[in-house]
Length: 141
Image 1 (cartoon, rainbow, N blue to C red):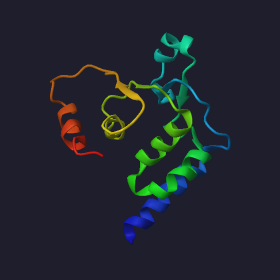
Image 2: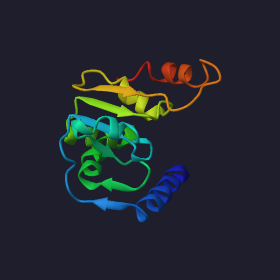
Image 3: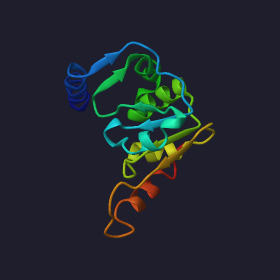
């Protein structure tokens, strides 16, 4: 019960300072996840008219949030999937290659989109974080 109350407290703090968007996300063939790291991807693929999804608390799409509620046990993945269902992209790009949630998205079976996670920094060793992400998401689905 204590963990649930802590979750509610964190959720309240998050939503209190977040802009709520009350319109459906637009359809786009290219979805870039995370406005904070979208540059230079948004410039490189501008001719594809990409849609950029905000995930750092800038805004929350209420349509996607309401669609995600039945699958809330999946956490952030439920919101991402709901948002993706509205956008219907063919390709999802992100420069956040070490995010567990995005790796879960990449490993989902029976999806109509491809996910490309682009390394955004220098790795000191090959197995720094990626091997842990691969092993923890291999059973997704």
